Structure formats: structure tokens, C-alpha cells
Amino acid sequence: MHSLNPDDRVAVAKWDAFVDACPEATFFHKAGWQRIVAEVFSHRTHFLYVERSGVIEGVLPLAQVKSVLFGNTLVSLPFAVYGGVAASSTAAAEALELEAQAIAQRLGVDHLELRNLRQRHPQWPLQDLYVRFRKEILPEVEANMLAIPRKQRAMVRKGIKNGLRSEIDDDPGRFFALYADNVHRHGTPALPKRYFAALQRVFGADCEALTVVDGAGRPLSAVLSFYFRDEVLPYYAGDEPSARNLAANDFKYWELLRRSCERGVKVFDYGRSKQGTGSYSFKKNWGFEPQPLFYEYCLYRRDSIPQNNPSNAKYRLLIETWRRLPIGLANWLGPFIVRNLG
Image (cartoon, rainbow, N blue to C red; front, side, top):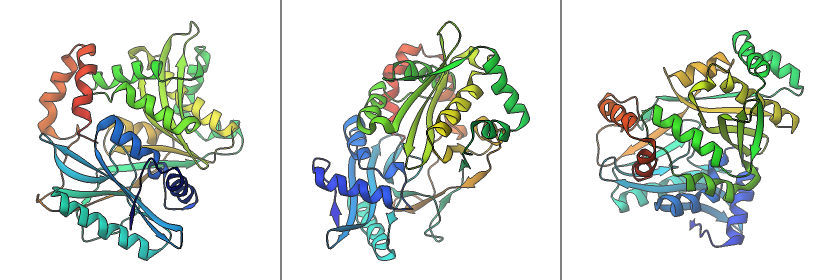
């Protein structure tokens, strides 16, 4: 059993080569997350890997998130929708999970959380709040347009008629302004701007910001996406209030789909949504079908799965209060809070 040193370029390259080749791996298994989680959020990381005869057989990225408000947890991986073990052998997977449990107990955490794509421990408590949405990207641009259900396709056409266009940004400035304003309207704290700058710096061309502007060049809506193998994953998004009437949001995702098709990407991963939310309905209306996510918990110092999300009724007053904060104050305070949510 080994622990990845982010300054060991040879080990990092071997880790990422394994992730690129392993069918179980996702973008969130990439080694770059270790540096981002540690440097931006100051969380202690444990990026474990099993190696035999110089060949990596499995990886498990972990980070400890310790908070007075939200508890003490070891999770794979905070700020990620996917995680858990990625391995080429059953023995490697089992060894990594046993080591994760040993670390969790040594650290005295409340629980261990593995954000798996498939269920690995039927006996562990399971968080069934989230689903993901994925769909094949067809080879021809027009075929993808016709595959969008009629009502959403009409919204895309409306955005085109309104003279909207998309632009790729070299820095997260315009994206962050739209994102921060959007989450503030929803009553939740924004991640720090330096986090998005770190994503683009660490992942380079695999992290891309797309901004939709009107005919006058005014930013309306933006999305920050990850590219992994032959997939695109729109991950963070934001808009300004007038975007809805101009159909900028539907146009935004169409432009990302169109551009991805033209560059040969095969899968559009619409990411995670909570069941029963507007985001869930929006993705369903685009013709995507929900697929379950298996967030498994090994509980040590608690009796039930934590519910640290806006759907929890006990956070309703906090959400309403946050909406009333001036945006500048919210953006200053937000990073101190959201770092502990993960």
C-alpha cells in the first residue's frame, strides 16, 4: 500500500496513466485533485494506491473534512460527484477499502463516505438522494439537435433567434461572476474564485469555461466543464436573472453539446442532481434518464447518514438569511463555510 506524494512527478504520472486506462475511474480520480483539495481548502489528503511489480492496480483518493458545524468525515472525494475505488483487480479494491477504514478509525472520524458509481457494500447505509444523467453524443450535430425533446429544442432555437453566441474563456472571471450571483440567489455560499483558477491551472485543456453572451457581448450564462477520455461533464454553472427569458441556459448546454460533438466527444455527462429538484426536471426535459448513484457510508461515531444539503429543512432559515446578504459579503464569507461541505 502506498500514499501518493503530489511532488513525485513519476508517481503522479503513473497514477494518471492508470486512471486514464481504468474503466472504473472518473475525472475525479485524477491526481490533480490532491493538490487542489489540499492547497485551496487545506484538507488533509490520503491518495492511496496499490502497486505490484511497478504496476498500479488500484487507486482511492480520500480527504478528511473536519468541521465544528458539519462533523468530521473521510470522503472520496469532497467537491466531487464520483469517487471510491478504481481498481483492475478485486484484491486491490479490497485492500484499498480496508486501508481507508483503518485510516478513518485512526483519525477518529464520524464516518467514511465512498461516492461509488456502483454498489459495493450492500450492508452499509446508502444515500439515495442523488442520481446522475448521461447520454451518448451522436456523430452529427443536427442529429443531436433533433434528439432534444421538442419543448427544449424550441428553447434552443429561441436562444439562436435571440442572437446568442458562446465563447470559450481563458480565465474563470466571467464564469465566476455569473456562478456566484446564481448560488447567492439560491441561498448557498459560493466556492472561492481561486478554486476555479486552480482547476484551470491544474487540469489545463481538460477544464474549460464557456460563456453565453447576447448580441452586445453581455454575459448571460456560463458553464465550467471537465473533459475526461471521450466524455464531457458540465460541472459548475451560473446565470444572470434575464438568462431564462432569453433561453440562454438551454442555448448554453446546446452549445456545449455542439462543440463537444465537433471535437469528437462521445458522451455528455449531465452530472449529479438531487431528486425532486429543478435541476433534476431540467435534465429529464432534455431527454436524459436518471441513473442511481451509490454513496456508501461506514458509520463510526454517528447513527445515521448526514444530510448536509439544502434539501434539509433545518437549513431553511440559513438559506433565506444568506439570500439577503450583500453579494460582496456573501462571496467573502462563502469560502469559509463551503470548504466544510465538500
